[in-house]
Length: 386
Image 1 (cartoon, rainbow, N blue to C red):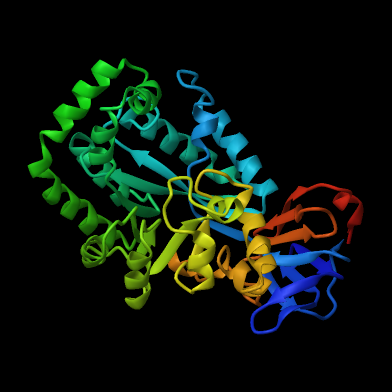
Image 2 (spheres, rainbow, N blue to C red):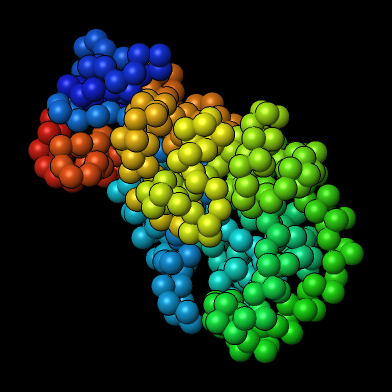
């Protein structure tokens, strides 16, 4: 039996908050809170012991696949580097938000296949529980059958409805904005515009495709999200299709309607760090403090997730246990992962140890399914053998 005893820290426990408590881990699960235990020990004195972070939506892995426009990195290497970044930031469960779009290049069907294959090959040795959120681009009709097959085969763990095509078409009128999409696709703006217009001409086929992929996700028991909901009517339509997670609502009224219906509302942790949305949309901090944002995700920057709860606590409206739930218990519940998100006996032993003594909170250790998978700042010296 594999045992690890995390001792001396202030642990975040359900209903108790941050209290001195040792945690006994056996065979990847939390066996007990407090008490003595044999096996290895990890001294967490002066540190916070928090539930591992659950990231429902992160696409920073795209920066590993394509660090510059036209510069492509092999998917296995990009995935390995992504996993290292996740663990260094205390993220023990991560949903990679992989866009399957009609766009050539980074978000194309071939790119989807490469990432899916890299994930499958890496799974036996994964240290972080990495999963795929399929961001289904509504107009990507030619890839529908393959997406349905991947859902049926278990290669997808979450579905998100995505419809960026109308906004892309509008932005193509601006040469500067249009250049971003053309560069990402690795083609000229004229060629990209021709592809976009051909795709848009099939608009009448989109609702039927949308219904098919929603039904497939429901049949597979997947959590379903909608992305960038801009009206209450849109949120209600997505909910009717089974989407009980509302990602990045563009207006507060949409978040209010989602919460009134019991939906989870996801916002980006970078929004909290910056104090505003990079797109000028709703403030994640204000929505969280009003009880309208229930989940924070990394969005495009993994380090934001561990920092954002401390920023919220520092604002004085939420305490740290409530703020930390936005990155642990709440996203786990939204994804249907009842085995993690809190530190309690029987739960998966995902822990993050945070040092708050410096100018900013710092992850000094991460434990995933009972295994120490990241340590820095002298933490290996605090590990004692059995």
